[in-house]
Length: 313
Image (cartoon, rainbow, N blue to C red):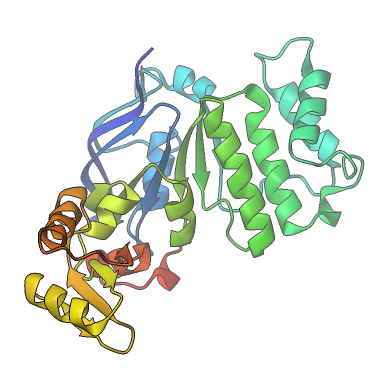
């Protein structure tokens, strides 16, 4: 089995004269969470639509679960599940009836539909509300039901387009837990989100899309280290040690009241070890030290020039 669940090369899409995807390359490992970030209009939803066969690309190649999106669209659809920005539940039906509808529509399910529904209701903590109309559900319950419906066919690759938009913090964290459980079971998740904390918490790999182009890719920590502001903070026992350390570590900023020293660094293992070795050579032993890096909000702003609040598509 290949270790690549999603692979796109030179992906292009335009609407008239407006280029939305300008030759982007993506690779998503099996059993990981990949998060695509970008400001409003960056092309995230278009990318999801193209990858999930809902929209045809103008150029490039895409393989999902080993299948070519253009020539093997049916096989691709059988391998994936898609949850959009808004819960696609029928509010006139009960939770159980919504799941039954998905079972009836899925031709690959034969004979064990009732068991699948029971397991999903239990998994998403919807047993008590299973016989109630979806119109009575809270926003968090609807999102859980929507995702449960996506899982009826046991897809190994799931596209989640802003799955927690509008949810309260508790419901959002419940969704995070569900996503982590899916990934631990080997499911691959392609996530777009307007919450950078969400990407930081969940994503193994992040790509930042801006004006149709990928401007950065990497793990959350790798992206943070690209932004100036990363530093190592040392705290010493007395002013004498602080004085000595300040002379040894170039570019350091001191705080005499706190007996701390802030030293610019990329936050990497080698550079931190070099600082500690330098202190050790002079028999200095910091009482504590920590690495401080910019968060994803800083990364996003530096790379796109936009705040996260406008990130909606």
